[in-house]
Image (cartoon, rainbow, N blue to C red; front, side, top):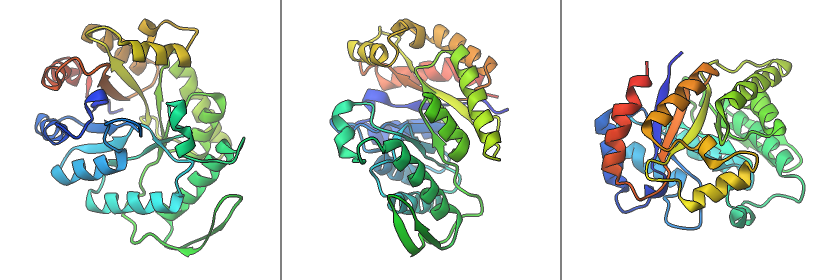
Length: 294
């Protein structure tokens, strides 16, 4: 199975320097660039950033890691993805999640109270229909469309990956996703996550390709910043931040090798803080991470 390791710019994904970073990734032969969904602040919006990065490159793949789907109309999302996939075939990597990581941004992606999971499921159904059929008529609890089309479809359907690690999220990946990108999970936990997804897919009469399982991993070579430490503690109060955030490239390499042993093959590595220069981060990434690819 192909091991591939991409880069998220993390706190450095801001307009100032974004173009230069994209050009460096393309020139360095990095597999992929990943853009996070954080509305408040200076980070580049993921769909805008995808379009910009794809327009500047010919080889680099670009993904969302992770964009929020519930609260966006799936037909509009399908139109955006279909347009990007037509302009940059085989280089668009959408990953969707249930809600923003920051609680203060959740109101920006509205969902009926207590129905966000159901909204996500229906959004995924309609999104997939729009991306795989020439014309779609659909009536659901949240959306109704009649004879809708987003234009010509590519020769190969666009893969839709999902995030999340709660039991319901893993079942959702099995029922509706083409792959999984997790976060804040230990290697041992991801083995069970992968098996739960595969079981849910089998129950739904589906199969997820064995190399479509991955994880996002921050690397804190200059110490774990307080904001990240709090985020880890909020998400995983049962673990220490150091259990999930390697403090050196040697630790990152060992952790990725453990993830590979657990059955994961796709990785998104990001700097834990903006303190380290991107040039230095990229040089160290190339030296430490690229030898793990096959």
